[in-house]
Image (cartoon, rainbow, N blue to C red; front, top):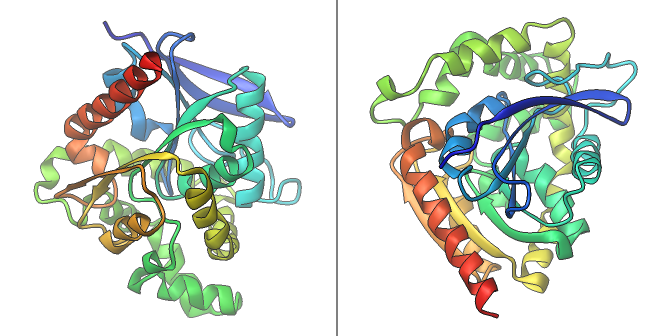
Length: 294
């Protein structure tokens, strides 16, 4: 039986943070970390699929979804700060152990937390999230140019186009064989959030701050080798943003790895949510049974 999703606000470090929650609170927790340019809305169906047996928490980052968007002058929009907000949320909710679903921006946020608190992480579920230089391919050329020179107006205009209506739609539909299964509510809702005052600059700040993530890749890869977390990869193999070479790269360092590839793009849940949900449930159920047998 599915458990009803609740929609909640909580104060973390002085900010009003929105999160979705479902499932029994005494069940194993799965923390769902969304990507750019979306929000916890991307997990709406997965939450329903898993809430009969698992406790789901899906927050919106500051400036995304329904969470507060503090002025740039008062808050540094960085991946370090986002990770600190998610840490604060887990602490305030009293969640001491959890699995993490890492997608796009959710990967560098989640890996910061996992590498800092390896004893708290039960497992990692990776869906089109990067921890390897192999992922920073053609799509990333204008972003790298922006890292090199933040005054590069040509690169800046390309980056702004990513969160235009057409750019948003492309991220949801590129590489999807049948785009009629992808709800336009996704990019239309994202666009409303992105059109808030200052949000365009917030997104540019985060593109620039993404340069802090690749130097951490060796640390995260060492975490994989040292702690050998159980990992499930559920990957949209047609992704242009983080191509399949990213998913393959995890095999170098993660021994407890289960790998599934799907014929879709970056936002794989939109077209293959049922299959991915079933794969996650099977993975978590088997993991839970192994724990009970010990």
